[in-house]
Amino acid sequence: MTADDQPQLKEKKMKMKICLIGEGAVGKTSLIRRFVLDDFDDKYLQTLGTKVSKREIEVPANGNEAAIKVDMTIWDIMGQKGFRELLKDAYFYGARGIIAVCDVTRKATLEELDDWIEGVYSVSGRVPIQFLANKADLEDKIAMNEKDLEQATKAYDSEYYFTSAKSGVNVETAFRNLALKVGKEEFNKEKKRE
Image (cartoon, rainbow, N blue to C red; front, side, top):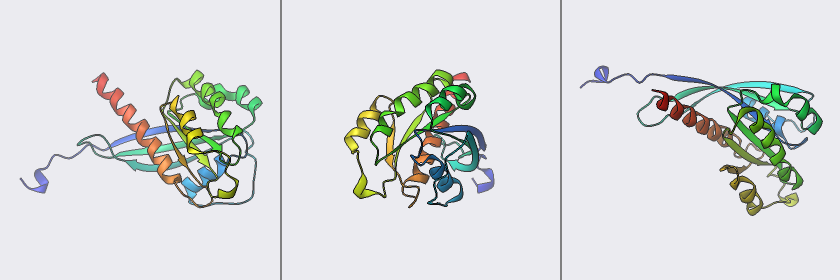
């Protein structure tokens, strides 16, 4: 059998809405900027309303399937509770995955994620979630440990990463891991329908 005789794998494409959630100033916008543009800016600019960014990536598929081309639409929302409640239906509708962000220097931002997650679940159902403990580069100011994160993520059957939008550590890995989780979940749903 020659290479020309090999069956061609069908390319799969998928659109994916990902919502970043978390309190103000945890670094959601900076994480998106690092992932989409591979850039970082020290200046803090509060997100007003929502901001939508896009990036196309490729993730491996199950078994002998071709890789999945994922068109990620990444939604950034301002971290104020009142705003979240006001627009949660519009913001969270159609979300296929969540990146829950806390600031490692402020333990309360980890505790607040439960309310954010429940807000998403009330609109979009239980979608895959990825926890990011951001600002890991501020080692001398860290106010939480792995045990705190394990306890918080266990209830959601999720993994967590210590990330730094400033240095870029684990940012690409975390976004890709969530895309892979969402892709596998969608792939499995598709197989069940066949």
